[in-house]
Image 1 (tube, rainbow, N blue to C red):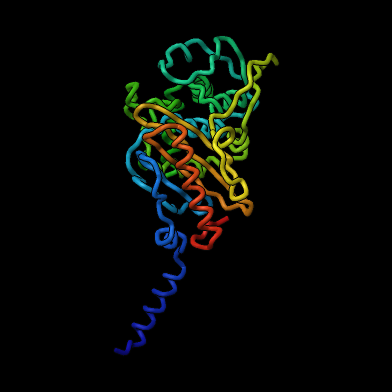
Image 2 (image 1 turned 90 degrees about the vertical axis):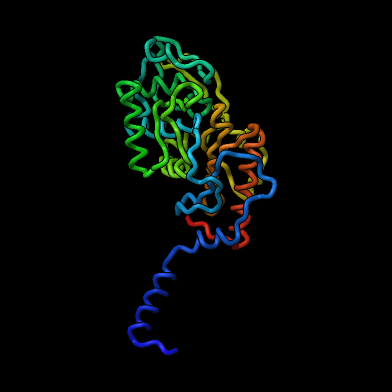
Length: 303
């Protein structure tokens, strides 16, 4: 059957549009398969951090609980509303009612720290007391700060996520309006890792905590096991962040950001139903899968 001039014109336009569409997701869907021995999980998403395309996922938009990966939002909101050298005094009313069972650094009433120091406590060892103190100082109250978090989530089009605290508490502690999706937390991390100050904090293995008066507190070790325990092929990629989290409802969570020598960046948001050891092992398998596939020409990663 011969096509008329009009039909040929529209066919040409269609083919041009088709060629202009990103090929990355199509290639990923056809060539990138989930590792056979991946552990049980609530959800995960593997994203090309530069393009925002999803390379591999399971339960991508399922409602899950983010635990302390919430603190990524806490940190980026603080960084966008307050200078790092701002001095913050710990208030008794802010830290006295933090729910039990959460990780606390041990901030004491009357102590003064810079925002920079508190953010290191927040992101390296997940200090819930640091989250509360930061939220109150930046927002004027914890409640006002949470409103800013939700406004930021809306701006980032995190349509499946909501916050009712800056710590990551969830239904297990009566906080029913903090929830998320794996896709949303890839979006959040993609955005946060564009902030140089944020990257500098989450990229550290250790940090020495000092009060404003110069007195030394203690040395922190990042809960990111890729910096300490979990071995991986550093010639293939380097893990440069981001944040761990654990609650009964969330399981064991980590949002990993990794980059290769050419600047190709991948984010893996993983919410495991198993142990912390299995969590990092599974993320390593997914990162290996993505970077090996790119290296072998099976998927395209952007820079």
